[in-house]
Length: 264
Image 1 (cartoon, rainbow, N blue to C red):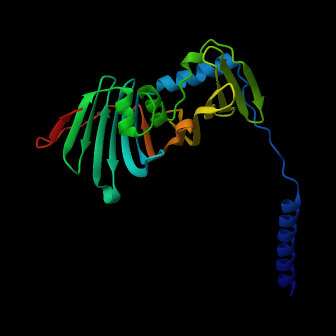
Image 2 (cartoon, one colour):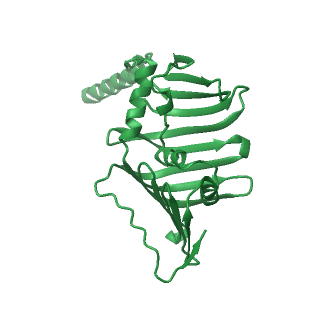
Image 3 (cartoon, rainbow, N blue to C red):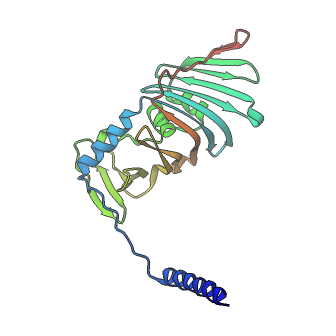
């Protein structure tokens, strides 16, 4: 009887402790962080973007336009500043296409038909290949989940503030009659959105960045979505695996000897 009484008392004590702990108001701890000036913030972000020399990743890419809507698994290898290689896979890992783009030319291997298209690179060719109207530098930034802020270096933003946990910056270009707005997490300095608009507020180009991971001390979004609302274009890139500045990163793209080669 005495032992039962002790056991009951202990159980009641645990129940009471659990109840008190569960009902007690949570102690909120404030996260401290260094508040940066707009100049230091932009310099840090741009310096981090430039630290990425090579980039490799595997995941899923989806493209949607007024005439095209499809998704596929892919592998990408990027060598900055101007080389991008993509391997597109179908169901069961079937090789559908391989694409190599540099600043001067492109090579597109349509694997199922064993046909190679090659020629000089221009924005129209990029649009035909990737189905979205982005120049090569912006396309590379989309695949690396980066935001190019070089044009804002040493410039004061039109608007700069900290709202809750975000830096908010706006740059107005009166000559182009456009504005660009950025939202940046104050804790880890991850750019979560960038919006390019005309002065009437109509979206020209916008990007969202989510699910950040840190690779080689650099923040990389696992998911990037870029939209051109005026054209109804969208590209979504979601990574499963990412590596940055990998030693001996090589783009190994060989054209089959029996492939039909077509000059574009």
